[in-house]
Amino acid sequence: MATTLRLLAGAAFVLVLSQTGLGEDFKLEDGFTRLDNGKDLEGWTGNTAGWSVAEGAIHLNSKEAKGNIYSASAHGRNCVIRLQFRAAKGADSGVYIHGSQFQVRDYPNAGPKQYAGPCKPAGEWNELEWDVTYGVAVVKLNGEVIEKSFKIGGNAKQGVGLQRESGDFDFRYVRMKGK
Image (cartoon, rainbow, N blue to C red; front, side, top):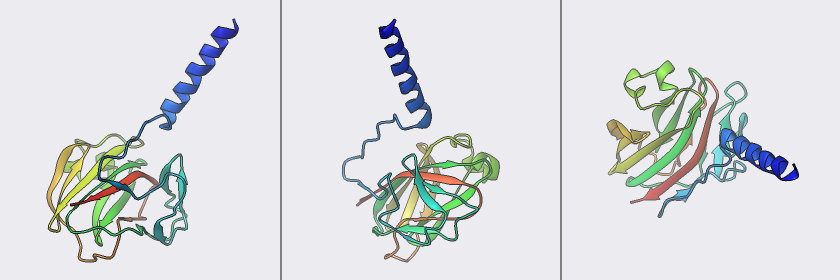
């Protein structure tokens, strides 16, 4: 009886971890530097009011946030930037690359519709990547190319930025690799 109860308790624990996303094993890819630490906003600048870290992700409370935040680490005009995002239904945010904004949204509900196909439903994690060569990025959403020539901005001193706009958002595993 005690063994059965221990097994059930262990199975319940694993189930809870898998449902919350805490049981995932994230492994940083070779050559990448992680910009978020999953614990706090250390390494991020800007108006952090309304931004926090919850369950290992940078959380945007759009009703409380006053502005955008930026990683303290800048990147070059040749790099790869990757992150995961989770949007509330209809939420709209953005990611700044050298000051140029790329709209990050609940694409199926907030558009643009051409990005909706590879996007997972609101509340699920999506992988977004910018492969930047000489200031122009190929952008992939969950492994599919959604933009072939996104031009990054000209502010070389500005790190990756996360925008406060409308609806709650979570960002995690923000990382980059110089080229």
